[in-house]
Amino acid sequence: MHRWWRDLSEGIAAAGCAVARFDYPGEGDSEDTPVRLASACDAIRGAVRVLRDEAKAEEIVLVGLRFGATLAALVAAEGGVDRLVLLAPFTRGRAYLREMEMQARLVDIEPDGTPLVKRPGLLSVGGFSVNADLKEDVAQIDLCRAARPPAPRILLLGPDLAHLAAKFTQQGSRAEAGEFPRLGCLLTDAHQSSMPEATRTRILDFVSEDAAERPGRSLCPPAADTTMTGAGWSEAPLRFGNGLFGIRCQPPAVLPRTPAVLFVNLGAFVHSGHGRHTTTLARTLARFGVTSLRMDLRGVGDSADRPDGESPLYKLDAVGDLRAAIDVLTEDTARPVIVVGACNGAYLAFHAICQDPRITAAVLINLYCFDWELTHGGESYGAKPARHISAYAAMLLKWGTWRRLLTGAAPVGKIVRSLARRSTARLIDKFVKPAGSNERSRSISARIADVRRRGARLVVIYSAGDLGLVDLRTQLGSLDEAAAILGEPVRVIADADHAFSAEPAQAALLHELRNLTAPRLAEYQTSEQSNPSSAGRISIALQGPLRTA
Image (cartoon, rainbow, N blue to C red):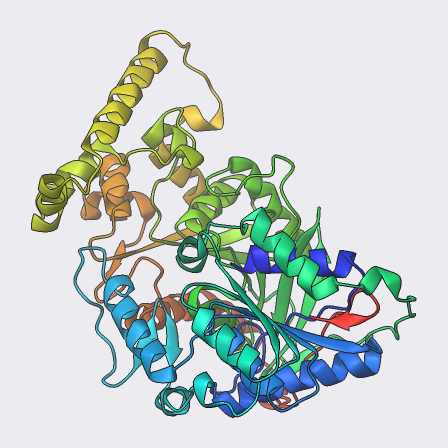
C-alpha cells in the first residue's frame, strides 16, 4: 500500500501541488506515543500548518484512506479545508471495529491455522494493535451525525458511499461518489503496488484541478536538520546507493567497533516493518548502544524502482542493495554488521552473509528456502510456484488441507502441473546440464561451513509449523542435524505467526539480538550511554507550489 500511496503523492506533486505524507504518532517512523484519536487529528492539523507556512498553499486538500479518510473528514469539518478525497472511509466507528475483529480472526493465525494468543481485550490485526483508549475513541465516531459537510467539494471512492455523498450534497457540498476497483486487494496484499489507472487519474484530476492555471510560487526550503530524537535514540533518513532509502537509528553515544544491525524488508512491507515492529526493535537496540539501519530494497517503500520494474522478492541481485547498506554502516569505522531478515529478507540475508565478510552474523526468520533454484527450479517468484513437494506431504496431515481439496478451494490441477514441470526441469539439470562450479551448484551445508570457518554465525528462527521448516529439513536434515551444521540450535517459537508480529515472537527476536550484540558492547561500554535525549520532532518533505494533499 505504501508504494501506491507514494506514487499517488508523486503524481499530485507533478501536477504542481505541494504534498506532505506523514506517519501518525505511534506509527511508522514517528514518535513513540500511544495512538489516540486526538493525537492523530493533531498530526493532520500540524501537517496542514506546515504546508500553509512553508509551501504558502492557497488551498488545502486532504486525501485519506480508510481510517485516514475518516480522520480527514473529522478534521475538515472544523473548517479551512477546500477539498476532500475520502477513499473507503468508515462511517460509523462501531461497525469499523466489528470489521477489524472479523479480520483479526482471519489474519492473526499461526502457520497451522490456530488463532494467535493475545492479551485479553487487545484488538490486533496483522500486528497492528488498537489500544483500549483508541477503541473507545473510535466507537464514538459517526460521520452521519455531522451538522454540516466537511468541505465544499468532496470525492468519495469505495463501496456503499452513495448515501454519504447524498447527505453531504443535501447539506450544500458538491459531493460525488464512485467505485474503487480492487480495493480489497490493495488493502490486504502488501505486494500490490498500484491502484487502477482510472482511479488514480480521477483522484489526480480532482486534487489538481486548476493548478496549472495558477502562477507558481517559490517554496521556503525545509529545515536542514531532519534528525528525530527520542528517549535513548536519534534517527535520520538516508539516501544511499542506487536510489535506496533507509532510516539510521543511533544511540546517544556511538561506540567504536560495536556491532551495527541491518534490517531487511519482510516481503513488500516497508522499512518500519510489519506492524511497526522494526522501528520498535531499532529504537530498543539503540537504548542498549546499538546502531541500526532499516532499509527499503529497490522496488519497496521509498526506494527507487528496480531496473526491471519488478518486485525484489527472491531476486539475488537484491543482495547488492544489502551491500550498499553495509557500506553506509561501515563508512565511519570497520564495525561488524548483523543482518536481520524474515522470509524474503532472510533469503537475501543468507546469500549476503555467504558473499560479504563484513557480515558477522545473520538472523534468519522463517526462511522459506535457502536457494530458490534448488527448491523451485526455473520458476520465478512472480509465477507463484507450487511449494516444495515435501511441503504438500506435510500439509496433507492436516484436516484443513483436505477440506480445501474436497471443496475445490485448493487449485489441485495447477499444483500437479507445477510439480510435473519442476520434476522435468530437475531431470534436465541432473542429466543434461554440465555440473558447474558456481555458488548455486554448491550444497547449502558447504556454504554454511564457509560462513562458520570465518567465525560468522547463522541464527535460524521459525514459527512453529512454518513451511520453511520443510526446506530446512530437505537441505540440512532433522533439527538436530541442522543444529550440528549450523553450530547452534534451530529456534522454533510457539504462538508466532509468519511475520513474527506476536509479542512472544518479538520478545524472542530481541533476546537473540541482545545475545549477538551484548558481548561486543561489553568491551566498549562507556558512561556516555546514561544521558539519553528525549526531545522529538518530525520533518516533512515538501514538493510543488500551490495546493496541499
